[in-house]
Length: 247
View 1 (tube, one colour):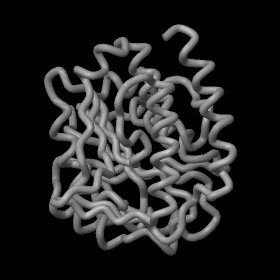
View 2: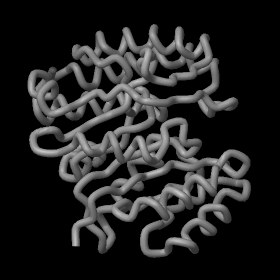
View 3: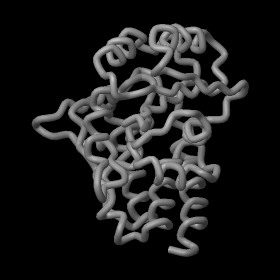
View 4: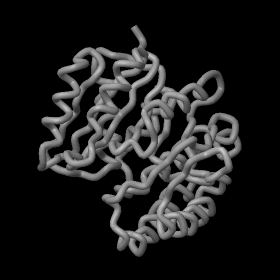
């Protein structure tokens, strides 16, 4: 049997931030969705919390755990690859931040766009009159500078490549998550570059949808330190050199 959707949740030391009740409520209300927690070498009580969720929904929740922390990019990538080595099969594969800055329910709503010729859909933190986007000002301004540089590199007009909610048709996910990523935190950019390599720059506009989020709220703590802003340009240069060789 092919399940409609698998949501991968990368987790690293989430013990004090993981909203267990929100996950349990979602699983109780949404039968057509499974969750795979990717525990990225957590050293606190995260694994125990994840196991408590799995114990309530053993048929729909699984845990892929690493002993050593390797960063979000590898946590997501290895979990995607793991999902293809299980007895389950899925139509769509998504990933979402553990703090639920984007809700599980909204992830499902975004997944509904992935059908027919649309192979990827992703959330975008666009502040509009009918949305509730709460971002710290410094993160917003830094994000816009980085987004401009990213658009220059990939040469397509994406407003927000870094939003932590993306949904892929399973076949596409299997292709673009095969190789390891250059950057631990800018792997979203590499994903778009890999889709361009697979389908061409012109076709990516036809197979993807950028969906304004209804709600986003910055968490008080981010695992991406502010000092990474100065290192990010090195990663962008490496990505540009790697993927623009052929494109």
